[in-house]
Image (cartoon, rainbow, N blue to C red):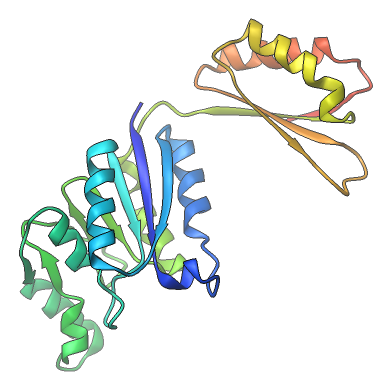
Length: 241
């Protein structure tokens, strides 16, 4: 299956000033598409660090996404770092300049021009409803850190990524993990390819644990869910969805 990695770039994330919501969004989207998001790393606005991690991720995963560090200010260094990662020059894209100028309806100052510098040879994907395109360098997709823009831009290129979707069944049980652990072990012995998650819930009046069963094979998943429900006493399973 296709693999992916996400680089979240920004001192504001590391300092806790801003809460990262792009990671869970991308994780859920790729999960639906059947792309395995294997690693998320948060790094500072440092050119050498971004370049090093970009190279490593590009070699390790089929698709790489970056979040943050593109814009007009001093700490927006992602484009420069990605150019460094692949040994490319950073060049001014005149078409993007013209696009920004049309949107701003005024001559570009140096800060505005900064957003039009791209690694040489970058693939610029036009996004008709957004003033700035999606930029792709090798297998690295450069996305903004602002959540609304990150989400819109990813949705605009979503169809480029496809694997075998993962199906999910949730089972809510009224016992603690320690009381059902042997049943879960037995289930995995029977269904060794099943992706099984167990998540205790504190403060929930109706159930103690939410179990998630996942598989790319719908029939395999259904049989595993039926097997687990048969293993547990009838009063333990609150609901299946």
